[in-house]
Length: 281
Ligand code: HEC
Ligand code: HEC
Image (cartoon, rainbow, N blue to C red; front, side, top):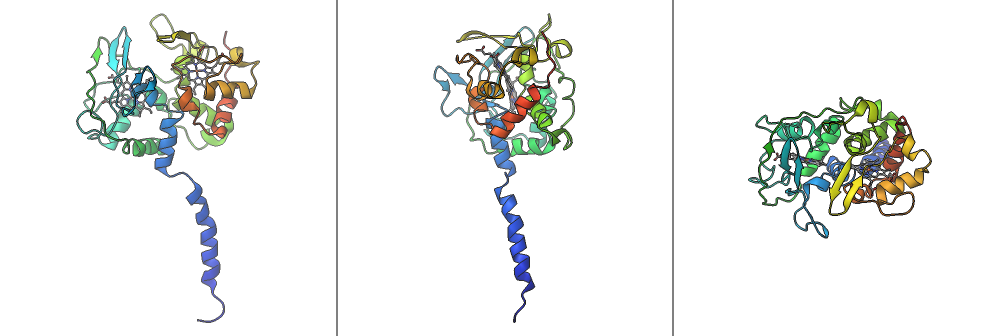
């Protein structure tokens, strides 16, 4: 073969483009990132000891949640076949995560924030399931739930459907998505007389109380009413380092340790969205 080698130029061009996908996240990397940052599944599904998450029990469940309508324990969502979700199909997992329903048709207690996960894109849901498949099996039977009343939680207005590419095309839109799948407003929305979130009148207004070994923490107002005077950096520090505006350490159960792993760009988008949440007293 002699002089001109058109394929050489072709190969060079192909190499140039293949560099990009190589640098992009694989679905598994995306799932790992989401679960261990904004989704913070382990904040509920990994049992906590006095020194933090129990070693060797990642996502193995057991934490007890008591409310008037139910007593439920966080499920074992490791790949153990008998006591975890190893035997569940991908479709069954997705129905539980975003639909809030077990394979036997029984709705999960709404402490599992499925209503907030309804906004998750199909791509992220695939990534999440791909990551769950890699979670080491841990044999750990969790007590069965006791449902005194069945409650179907509803997502906040504007979070009912999986986000579209258009929804995710602006910093505020991406931030809104992250605040949705991070179920931030589950804790930061005021509650009505029966414990129901008041999305219409108290979205972001705070007030929910969290008793625990730390005493009682109260979710603050994170609308412009609460954060209006804060700088972007102060808001970012509160989320990712658990440090209040005055420099004091913030209390659980907010998953600061998970949010510490958020990419700076994602934190910036979250702050951009919070700036758009209308002020509520
Ligand atoms: C605020 C706490 C909380 C968070 C955050 C949370 N879960 Fe749950 N989840 C629960 C509780 C509690 C249950 C059990 C509910 C019941 O028994 O009715 C549950 C149940 C489940 C189930 C059903 C499993 C079974 O065996 O019944 C799956 C699957 C699941 N969660 C996956 C996830 C994933 C994935 C994430 C992160 C995207 C997540 N959960 C985040 C509390 C939580
Ligand atoms: C499980 C409940 C819970 C979730 C989920 C949660 N938070 Fe919080 N958040 C709290 C509580 C409680 C505090 C106050 C802790 C304290 O006062 O020591 C807090 C504090 C804050 C603060 C500091 C505000 C201030 O006035 O001190 C900001 C900002 C904040 N949260 C934003 C967020 C964002 C954004 C998300 C989602 C990525 C989120 N939170 C998810 C419960 C939660």
